[in-house]
Length: 164
Length: 171
Ligand code: SF4
Image 1 (cartoon, chains in turn yellow, blue):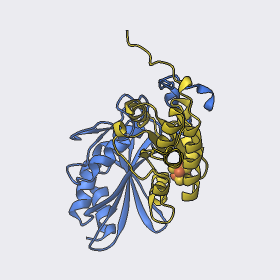
Image 2 (cartoon, chains in turn green, yellow; image 1 turned 30 degrees about the horizontal axis):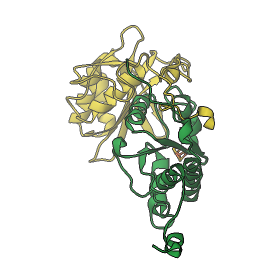
Image 3 (tube, rainbow over the protein chains, first blue to last red; image 1 turned 180 degrees about the horizontal axis):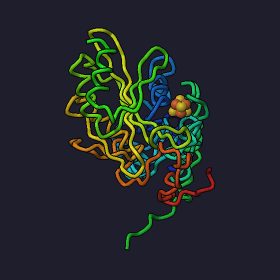
């Protein structure tokens, strides 16, 4: 092989950035749409904003096949155990987007039955403000999350906790 | 049979248990004792009020009324397009009312809802369990003495940490 061939056909990178690049461009969302924001999330999937341009169109309704949990809508006290269970079922690495005022803070529903922000109980990576957020907002949140995924450091990953 | 005839007939049949008949916005409201609600609504059904539009309940704690709770039935006659409201009163000590599920199937879920939110029991209901709140929920949130922000139900969940120790400074 000649030297020029090597130069034009081989790319050197680190394993970390190659894997992060792959992950951020093929996020598989698991939508947890419980209210109006879920409808707006469907609009973000549709032709006008089309989040498949960012590699996130493979919507899985199975938590075991997805790595991005999008919580879209208010979470009631009856739904919170379900949400926690779904989060636990997702394989690592996984990310969470909290979409809309309700998922992020309870929104206007300051009542006994609505969780005042899912981040009180599960870790959230990106918050999308709005009631509901416009589809452009969802795309912006997705891009923000891609930047986060791109910055993941393998050295931050501690070995998994052992079950003893 | 017209509404006026039906009302006077019911007043004659259940003299002690009809508290009052009032009118609001052109529609008649009949106030009755809770225990006879099945018989009274049966009479209404026989005289043409064949559609149960809604059941709801009111906590009169701060409003005053014949009793603490009133279960409100909205009936519609599809022949004459007349409407009537039946308010059945139950006291706090004896929160029992006959179920009207045998007259209208639609009463099933609405009575479950009232049971869930007000704690009023419907005798003869086929499946009287909570319909909206979790099964292990305590209390009846639409009662006036239930705090609006609840009793910390919304704070009692396990906190899930990031699992594989990705640094938690991200939030
Ligand atoms: S934030 Fe607004 S649009 Fe979204 S679920 Fe709440 S009320 Fe609905």
